[in-house]
Length: 325
Image 1 (spheres, rainbow, N blue to C red):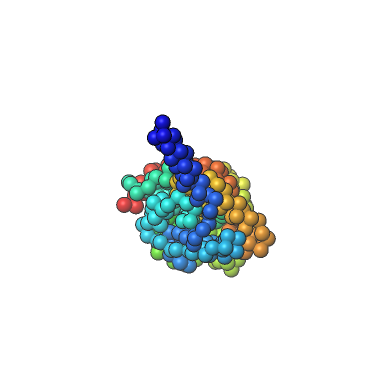
Image 2: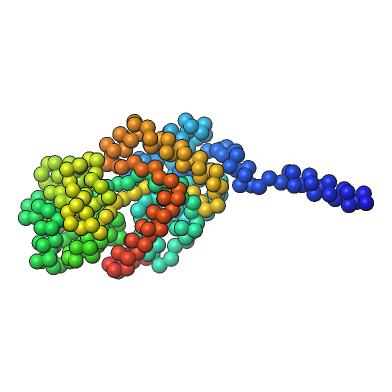
């Protein structure tokens, strides 16, 4: 009898002492330095977004927030690092459009882009724009389509590299408009843009922020914004949909992901803080001045957005026969 009673007492004590790890983590988060993994080199389009958010997170949470650049393999290295990190909210990754291109462009990934991550928020969109060389005799999307149909395979479009978002933007345009252009990859946005300015190529698709100065200088002609709506930096440029291509939409984007299994309470803490930061006028104005459109979505929206983007780019990659490995 005493042994049975003792066993019950010990079981009760064990149950009291055993607290689910996830609950403990969510209550104590954050309790040490936080690492924001940027799977791109320093100085690119994504890196400044991370570095503009981290000081605000430090102020709110009282813990150091460190930006770690882990570039390589089209963001796969940095993303994989977070997929395998402890799901406690102290390690997250800031991914971009390539995250949803890779599943179809690579034959195999070391992680599942849907199952191995917990979406936090889509934080920014990066509006793109369709531009042509200023000497090209076209002044609208319709005129460009007619021009290309009359010259199949004779007009070049530039990108920042094979398999890049800009390359895929051109391939999607070809598919939607029913035209044929020749892809010419360059090493970076600068050389790609300048090839159109010089007339070495005739068409390109890149960020509004990068292209607008050349458009204002008369060296490039903007035909359409490639996003869901007109870009804040170029409000007079119609969207592709307004220009007669309702199925053409290409925007870069950036969003936060945590490892799968991160407690819901921690995801919510991240989401609430990011939303608060993005709602401040100072932060919004800074983002817009850098060619970004602040979003700050819910985790649920971002989860569905990722699935939609994977499906969308999968079709483009397959049709264009793009392989990155």
